[in-house]
Image (cartoon, rainbow, N blue to C red; front, side):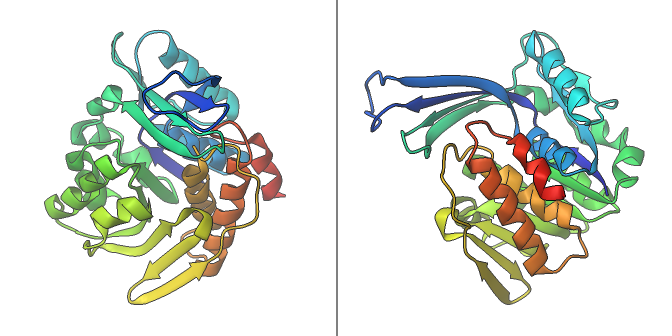
Length: 283
């Protein structure tokens, strides 16, 4: 399946304490630097699953932008229609984790994606609509997301990204003329921001260790999380959505949930945001 992925690509700096995290103090632990970004992670997982993936993003300026772009190409992700921002424009995520891998909090500097305006997307309309499915994260502005809702001709999946950015989807629906799209993916906290929206045909709500809830019209379907050893939750939601998309827009709710939860389990068992072992699920 050919999939167009739109949104953020950045460098992840992940810090994990060796013992229970003490606020206001320096905590012994480990720090890892890896490539991330919600859209890039989704694209990477889809490529590992064997899909034909086109990423649309603006990479941060300076040293890391070209590094991320080259890594995407090495992974099999097409980045021919991306750009690299001016030096000094950042794409970073810094996450702090407790010893059990749970995210305590983080800071995202995604100023590079501010250049992904409706006009920027319109120049890539043919790329977007030549895909079988399109996914965008809420790193893009509400105006850009509204443009996608109105102009994407294929099933459109939107990822809320964070509580702070989830409201962009709500605003995008208000700004759009069509006011509907195929699927929303969010976690329980993000859904508190989005629970009142009417426009997503399907709503995939990750509830962590409890599993996945899927809402379609007035029906609620619940699927338990799969047993796993959690090493890092960063990237678990991205893998979940990648699995859902990989199952295909015509797949049943049960099949999309099965693929999503399998991919999420694989992701959280890795110290990195994307686990290369996810490729084994495609066989």
